[in-house]
Image (cartoon, rainbow, N blue to C red; front, side, top):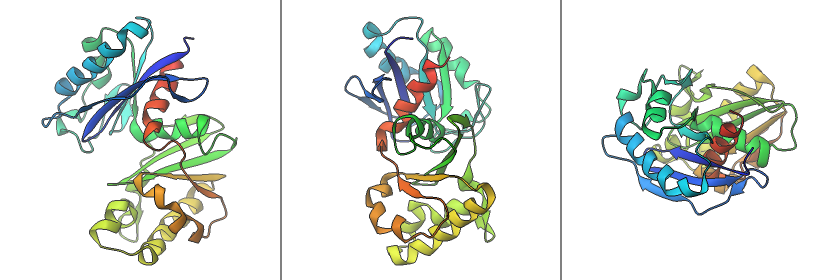
Length: 250
């Protein structure tokens, strides 16, 4: 296994890539970011990804797979949903599209799953050998479940029904902002959500990411759960690092 693998994280506003040192679990190069095309179809995004791969190509073995995250459920190389990207991704043969454009092997993974893998191996969950649930509080709620280091993909815990509504409509960071909630008003929503997750899965550890996790001291200590609940450590590096790690397993 080569020391560094390329991870690429596709987001609604930007596509980011960096070489990752898998021994340290950190970037081995500066991150390159290119804005996501306005018409974010698979073909247009593949063109941007190709530019990023080409920029790192002199440092890559041609046989080394590339790890790519996408804000979608991914099963057997197909993207089944589309969050903050064009609806043409739904049921697209996305992994094959990237392979054809890049001329190399690709490992395609849901963005929250990649972040969860990174937190398990290098971040806030690295000392937990049981069941870990990672959630990202943002526009929606992304999620990842890892049991003894093995990813259980495409959990989509933000889409659980809670009190007659989709959970992420009540407990995401976006819900806090849209409803102009103070933390004292937001915390009961988080308590209801994480208590529900705990009753369903009984994890050994919750890890909470997303931009709002920078203010985790204002809300995480107020939650009453059986499992510890801690902020993510890798922040916006997690997707790239997780994608590179999963590529290294191919």
